[in-house]
Image 1 (tube, rainbow, N blue to C red):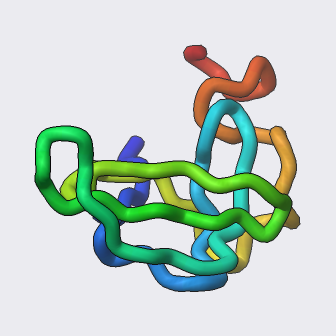
Image 2: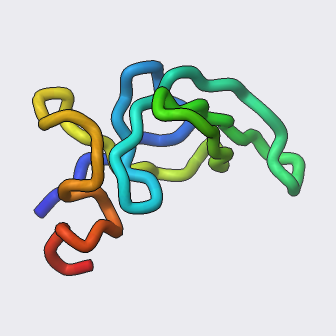
Amino acid sequence: MKVPTKLAALLVPGDVIGYRGEWRTVRETAGARGPMGGLAVVVTWAEGDSARFPAGDELVVRDSAAPPTGTQDAPGSPTRLGT
């Protein structure tokens, strides 16, 4: 099974990303420096809070035709097979 991914540097508002066992919607992104001086992306979630990723990280994205956000089938969620 091929899992759709997207580089953190290419995220745009409205993307739905699997993060810590939940599907989260990107509200906004900003560039920043990582701890070793490389490019990082700060993602602010529509659900609140934010996260920082190295720009080259591949993140699991949800198809826009998928059901609303939540934990169902999110990477690392107990409802997902094989995790």
